Amino acid sequence: MMKHQVLVVLSRAPISGELIFSLKDSALRFDISLHSIGLQTSNASYFCERFESSGHLGVEQREYLRSIAAQFNTDLCFLKGDLLPQEIRVLAMDMDSTLINIECIDEIADFTDKKAAVAEITEATMRGEIKDFKE
Image 1: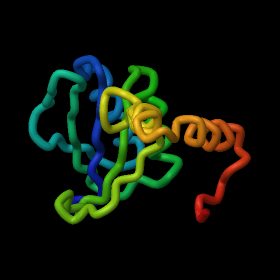
Image 2 (image 1 turned 135 degrees about the vertical axis):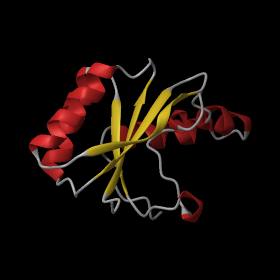
Image 3 (image 1 turned 30 degrees about the horizontal axis):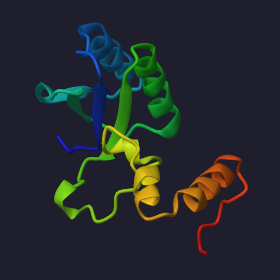
Image 4 (image 1 turned 180 degrees about the vertical axis):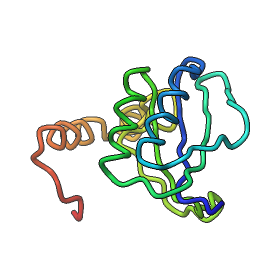
């Protein structure tokens, strides 16, 4: 089977069989099968389970599956089937706490005596006043 997409389910709690059934059953409505890739894994912070799809899921189909996952307080992301993690060169995140357990940009700015400037930029960005970061 060609891997069209890889679905990654992430949760702070163990991923329920009910969620997995709902995702697989819903995908079948789109004539797509989801096949498990290994077992559910976990570390101290989250649980993860991965699936391969038998076909390509379009935007509306992916949003529908995400809405099911959201009902279980679970995140669902879709990766290209041929993605090789070792080839990733850039990682973009909306917040520093996405990667680590604390928000440290403010603390680093404070350490370098730039806390006020960073706070001003952060607040302006959150108000939508800064959208182009070329400066």
